[in-house]
Length: 79
Image (cartoon, rainbow, N blue to C red; front, side, top):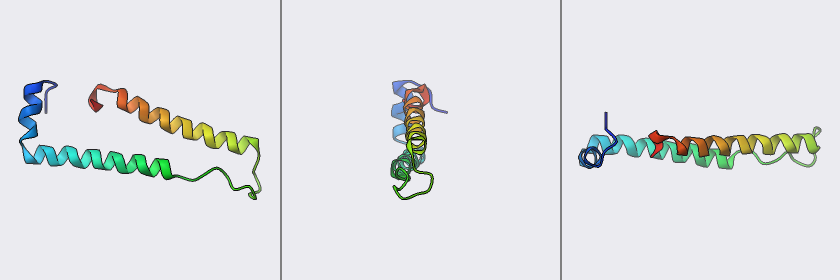
């Protein structure tokens, strides 16, 4: 467990297994974020259920995902 101090961070930064572990976490998080950004586009204009409600639901879901990412970044563990 790494304490939230500069000394603890400096010590962890020279331990290759710790660095590799955190690199993999950041890489996985980046991949998940990229995947989220690439997810489906708004409903196609020729779909049966196209209308303001489906468009609204798409953007509401998109906003919820972005808010979730923003909230994760605000947590002390992400710093």
